[in-house]
Image 1 (spheres, protein in one colour):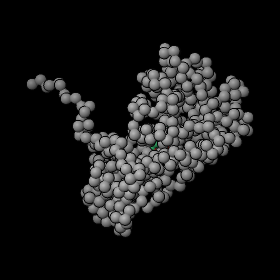
Image 2 (cartoon, rainbow, N blue to C red; image 1 turned 135 degrees about the vertical axis):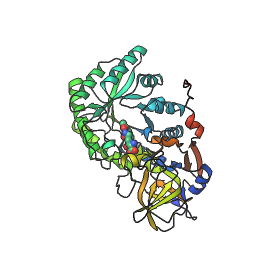
Image 3 (cartoon, rainbow, N blue to C red; image 1 turned 180 degrees about the vertical axis):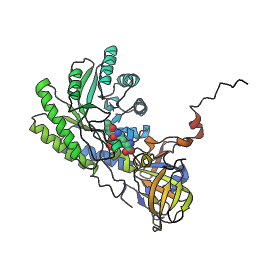
Image 4 (cartoon, rainbow, N blue to C red; image 1 turned 90 degrees about the vertical axis):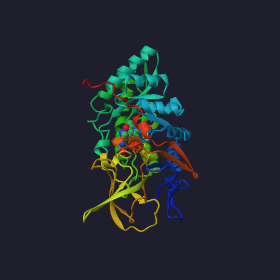
Length: 439
Ligand SMILES: Cc1ncc(COP(=O)(O)O)c(C=O)c1O
Ligand SMILES: N[C@@H](CCCC[NH3+])C(=O)O
């Protein structure tokens, strides 16, 4: 088994995480179950923060809560001194419920509504990352109405194609996000914002995509931005106090993936920023990053019970689990790959290759194709690794399947941070039909 934080095999041959046997977690909480290794999240957070400290660079490490948003998770991020990137009124509301310090919250999104912007102002959050001209004008008008001033970053699109899945690319010219850096849009946005009374431009933001394994794209984006900042300093006396380089640092899902250590990405990118700012005679800005996946991805494990099986003679054996695309849509959406083991018989030798089917009424609901496993049958437990990012946060109720609970484990203690959805939860928004049919 690959090394996933505190996950190990105990003497009963069971998977253990955070000092707790997952078989006992399944007995107590049922399956499917999301389990997070809290020590690993803390280790990742500290790795990022220490790297900045060692480089002597003032920084904010903001957890991109879209990866996994929950009150308990935001409280953990706060304990670790992280800032928070939210992307909707719902994430902001969750942060407020978690008691997250508003001044360390950054608000993203390519179509924030008036209500969301007002909410952000009322909570006096640290910064709004403005994505487009419509939002800039809307924000200025709200600030004037309320006689408020708010810190903003301008999100720029540098025209970089990072090497990752097409659906999670964001830095290329033809993207729905941000002001284009190359065609004059970003400059126009800066000029307009500098003339506004309601906004204070702290600097620029750029996020080139997700699940990226090399630093070349990040460095190229930083070079392009710093080149522009140098021009803008001369022409508009604009100095960027903050440079936010986004998230996107890749993690290892399977042996095909070869990421850097999370903190290593930062080290390489920052050295480039230091070099380029020196070359252009610019002051080193405060650096902000906003990792999601690399903070929580490999800290998450999903536990399922195996149920039915089906053979297609000479083709394959399907084993069905009690979850699927409703608790993890990534295989169906991105063809994402995962590793898994039998959590209750982790030392048993591999005997066959099976394909793991979800329980949704959808042929594309396949969690893992061609997984080597010991001979498994109903009541065995399957542990799927690396499900901590964009798993629960993209979960849905397709086929009216309730979402699973989420449990944090650390130092042999388990704490439920999201309870299992009930059937009553599923119907709580439904209203009975009042219209009757005339006979
Ligand atoms: C603006 C922005 N910041 C941060 C992130 C977090 O990315 P990741 O989870 O890949 O670190 C995303 C998602 O891709 C994003 O869109
Ligand atoms: N949801 C995506 C990443 C999108 C990141 C947000 N911009 C994933 O699971 O990989």
